[in-house]
Length: 271
Ligand SMILES: Nc1ncnc2c1ncn2[C@@H]1O[C@H](COP(=O)(O)OP(=O)(O)OP(=O)(O)O)[C@@H](O)[C@H]1O
Ligand SMILES: [Mg+2]
Image 1 (cartoon, protein in one colour):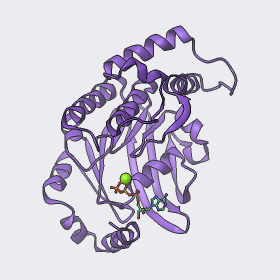
Image 2 (cartoon, rainbow, N blue to C red):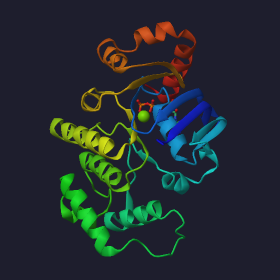
Image 3 (cartoon, protein in one colour):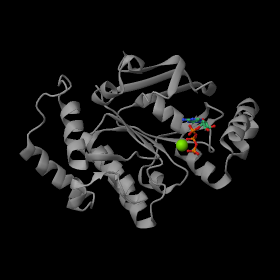
């Protein structure tokens, strides 16, 4: 049975500030969803809350993965359960090499009962897999020996996120502007990689993007629009198209209450 992720009436704040004001979202494994919305509407906040970032406090609502309460899980257990977030701004971890990071991550995800300090997946097996995936992603072999994201260019960081996706093969992937900062060739390449990985592995993918290239390759079955911390509209691929050409003015007009909250959030963010 394909897995199902169900988010109901999710409220999230950062510090004292409420950001998400009741988000409802349902995703099945194998579906491609697009999440769009103006700057500061809460898209990244939703992705962080799903991943379990400690700065984002859940004040109400629920996230269930096949009926299991995701909010009760530690971030590492969420990854083990098959959730993956590719960050809009990937973090640098000096001192941790790409190779070691991925070997740990994969050992934990593939062997959910593994305790810290227990055996990792075999070096030989891991090396081969990493080499194959890196060459598919056109990442130079020496990247495996570099510190994670340390001194990586913007484009290299994003490709690193795709490499993690290819290695971890989650059930649900949340790609937060994985296409931003990439040159045209790289966007095409990443878009095609996402398409291939998601179909081969029956992933559910939520693509957060302001551009349409990633969506041309990964035509969304469902498009959500966020405004002022709520998903105010859900439609098909044509909704994504409409937003690309017409912008968010009509959406603001149709949802005046959310538009007011959006304007407040934009003030905070200085958009
Ligand atoms: N860690 C944080 N500290 C302070 N404010 C935050 C934090 N994270 C989010 N916010 C605020 O929450 C609001 C929503 O931000 P969020 O990053 O989720 O927007 P977004 O929809 O991803 O925007 P963008 O399209 O610009 O990436 C903004 O007003 C932002 O300033
Ligand atoms: Mg964002």
